Amino acid sequence: MLKKEVGGRGIPVINPMEGVKLRVGLIYLDIENPTEDLLNRLTVKNEGDKLAKYGITGETNLYSIVYKLSFGKFSGLFTGDMPPVVSDRLSTLSEVEGLDYIKIPHHGSINGITENLLKVLVPKLGVISVGKNSWGFPRPEILDMLEKYGVKVLRTDEMGDIKVASDGNTYWVEK
Image 1: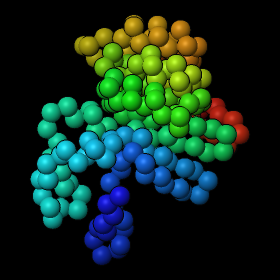
Image 2 (image 1 turned 60 degrees about the vertical axis):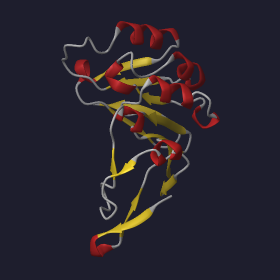
Image 3 (image 1 turned 60 degrees about the horizontal axis):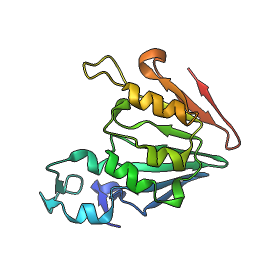
């Protein structure tokens, strides 16, 4: 894990990559994507730049930061805009089994979550962050797949801001 400091305050900069585990009090963040191998394939844009070292070309969604958040008995997966190839890779990791919550990737596009991952996660709640768009997001195929696995779906285009809160034992939705 590459650690550097920014400015004179000694604030650490951590390159988020698979395997990095962070703890803030009782909250744990386990980074699941991008992989170190993927990051090693990037070209160095500016060796001296502490925050923007790499230049990303091609499929930028491959580099979406995906992390598992755990707080007591509550756990959730935050997926960014991860593509299906990342979704399928995550389905092979035991760390993501049986979560309570998932942020549905890529606004409910077919270019996000896969059935392989849903079979492993079996989340109780999924939130789709989406607004009015010309692509038809969230896609009916994704909504049908979520329904098939009994995932309660909440959408920001229907509810506005959605806040999922937890006390470490249970969780609830606040508006």
